[in-house]
Each structure stands twice: as C-alpha cells, then as structure tokens.
Image (cartoon, rainbow, N blue to C red; front, side, top):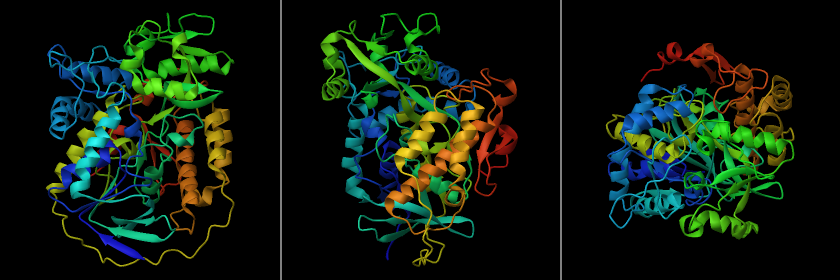
Length: 528
C-alpha cells in the first residue's frame, strides 16, 4: 500500500481547495487530492460571478443586509460580516494571481445584478464564464508548487485518539493509498447529484460530508438545500444551468400562455430570492405547465452570455425564438460540516471549507454569487490559521493501516434509485408523509449509513454509500425542522416560526439520529 506524508492534505479541487493550496504552498508542503481530474468541479462550471463591494456607491453593510435577508435571518451575523467585508480585498488578491475581471473602456468593473441583490455588485470574467477563468488561473499557479493526485477517491478519514491524521483513498486501479498530515482539509463541494435534476458536476455526491460524519464530526443545517430556479431543460431532463445574471440583465420568467410568472408574487419580481422563485416555477411544472425565460429584451445576448448560448445550442434550443425552457434543479447545500470561521471542525486536525462546510454564512438560503466569494474568503482564513499553527510536524505513528477485511454483502441501490427517492420525497416542497417514506427507504441501509466500519467496496459503491449517508441526513433533518424557512419548505408547516429561528438541527454519528439544540447555547461549547 502506498503511503504519502505532507504538512497539509487538501481533498477537492474547486475554488476553495485550489485557493487554500495556493495560499499555503509558500509555507507548507501541500498535497491536493481530487476525485476526478483537477478541472472537474462546480466552481469550474460557475457562470455567475463573484459578489463583492468594489463600487463607491455600494457598502459592505448593504451586501450584509442582502445576504441576511436572502438567508431569512438564520445566518450567523459575525461570520456573514467577515464574508462581505473581505470581498474587495479578495478581489485584489485574485487579480494579483492573474484573474482578469470584465471591465469597460473606462477601466471600471462591469458589475451585474442578480437575485436578492439590491445593488449591482457582481463581478464577472469572460462574460458568463467566471468560474472557468478563476479555476484555470488558479490551477496554472497551484501546479507549480503543489503535488496534485487526481483520480483519487477519498473513502475514509484516518482517526487516531480522536484526531484526524490523514485519509485513505482508492486509485484508478482500485488500490488503497494512504495520506498522512497534521492538517486535513475537506473542500469537496456539496451534494447536488443526490437529485435527478442538478446544476452540479457529476463528481459532487456529498463525499466530504459523509467522510466527516463517519469520522465523528458534527454536521448542521442539512435540511437546507437550495434549488436553482433556472436549469435549462430538454425532454424533462436538466441540460445545464442558465445563470441568474440573465434575469439581472432583463430576462423575464413567463408561463406557456405568456403571463409574467413573478408578477405580484414578490417585491423583487424576477430577482426575488432563489427559494421563492424556485417554488413558483415548481408549482407550474408540477401541474404539467411549461415555464420559459424570456430573453427577447436582452441586446447582444450571445455576446454577453456565451456559455448559456453554447448550452442552448448543444440542447437544440433556438435562441432566435427568445424563449429558454427552464425548471428548478438542485444547486447548493447550505448545511454541511460545522466549522469555525477558519474551517476548524469538531474533530481535531480536520478542516472544511467551501460548500462542504457550514459556517452559518448562508443561513437558510444562499445569496446569489456568494459561493465563489465564500470559497476564497474562508480559504484565506484557513491558510492563515494553519500557517500560524504549531502542528507542523506529524505527531502520529505513520504506518499503513490494515484495511478492512469485511465485505459489505447487502445489495446497494443505484445512484439513479437514490436520486429518484430524493427528488420525489425530499425536494423543493416537503411533507411529513413524504419525508417518512424517504426515511423508511433509507432505513434499509442503516448498517452502511450509520457505521464507521471500513467496508471493502468499489469506488462506485463508496460513492453510493456517501449518497445514502447524506440523503438520510438531509431527510431526517428536514423531518426535524417543523417550519418553513428559506430553501426548506414544509407544506404541513408553511410558515416560519420565531421558535425555530435559533434552533439548529445537528447530525452526529455518535448520536445516530439528528437532534435539535438552541444554536447559540450549543455552539458556545465548540472549542475555537
């Protein structure tokens, strides 16, 4: 069995993982592990931009209020303030790294506006190819100083005496590989592939959340799953994401009979928060009605949105008609591995940044274009903390771990079966009856979900195990929260409750079932 040691192991190659690797590489020996190739991530696919206050007519307080409103005031105020106040600084840092944001002839940023932002503060690069620009530039830099191991499936974290000391992986030849480091960073993204229609990359199956759960880390807010309102659909299936920036430039949501969908539904109309718009579209689609994004008012659409144009061309959608067929799709998980503002989890030596983490910054519903910002801001906070840490030398006995000889014999479901259950019962609109049906289905796989046994499984089976684990946590957490707030909508509890504003649903393998605690009281016990 191959064994590697390093100062820092980073699992994941999206914006958070790459930014952390870049910032750490000058002081630490860093190995970056990625499930697919280094270019495969949600960040790479991000059409929207990065939200930051860089205009003198804007203020961080306005960005803060927009973020809090979108999150239904369930956000952690201190961490949200940190996020938005670091915006301009991180834009400068990205430009120093070679990222070129779109500017006008006068040299000023071409700022866009997206849903729930009351001001234009979205920076783009390459029109609607911001993610590609950021990731490409970061990869070119990271490759110079960081060891990258791609096509490496992380299957279990190594825990010794309550501390995370490394990770076990399977390579392309199905051989076990072990990595040891005093700092292990999860940057694996969310769990969009748990649903049939999603904007997420094929590799995003909740792996980091499941790894952390089995390792004993605490997770929080798993019931909050954001559905992007405008997924391009073809023959009932998702065919790519249509950026929210399209609506920011004048696109309108219309029904098949030509009526404006959002008229009278919300004061911000088509630019209402994502959860509001997604539910309105879902209601129409559920009743077999089609919804379109009307782009006829947008001048030079193809020049402004080359990525969306390419998606439509590939799907055979005629843009000359000015109507893009859309439906909601799973997009972003607000919940995740509970962390401090610098990524520390409840397991010593284990960190999490980006979508896999839960700092509380997004509340019950993420504000548009805050995800790329989150990735760079908290990667920066993490790097600073690790660089100044005393844990620079391995304090564990680095030796190959005798990896399990117990083969899991029960038949596991297919990825499609997991997606079907989650889409049918744990989607945009939820009820107690449907959640119980999903929970009953997951109960069949309780042994593999709620055990930290290192079973002998193939890469595909490990992925399904992770999907089952995270699917169960989302379902059980949604059953616990008896209210509707942001992206979590219960038809049997349609209103938000003041009681639930400070109540958090936590998940821990040590307690088996998700449990509810007052967020402020419980987090005070979290050693920072």
